[in-house]
Image (tube, rainbow, N blue to C red):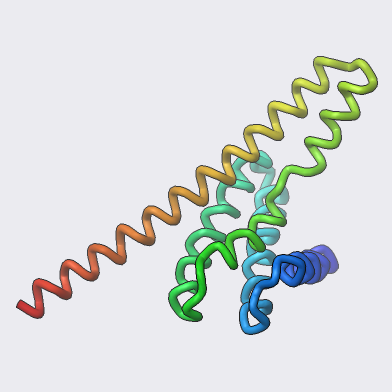
Length: 148
C-alpha cells in the first residue's frame, strides 16, 4: 500500500514538473498508480517484468485515451505521467554497474532485460492506442450510417 501511495505522489510530482494542467493532476496520478498496480500484480503472480510492463502500458494507453477525450486534453498528458512507473530504471542501473565492474555477461543480461521492458512499454502503448482509435472509428462509421 505504501508503494502505491508513493507511486501516486511520484507520478503527480512528475506531472507538476512537466506542467500538466492542475485539473488533470489527480487523473494523471491515478493512471500512474494503476500502471504500478498492474506491474506489481504481475510480479506477485510471478509473471516476467516484461509482461508486467506490457500490461501496464496497455492500461496507461487505454485509460489515457479515454481521459483525454473526457477532459479535452492531449493523451500525452496522461501517457507521459503514467509510464513513469514502468520505466526500467533499476535494470539499467544494474547493467551499468555490472559493466563498470567488468562483469560483462551480467551487464548484457541486465541490458537485455532493460531493452525488453522498454520495448514492451512501447508495444503496449501502440497496441492499446490503436485499438481504442479503431473502436472509435468503427463507432463513427456506424453512427454515420444510422444518420443516412
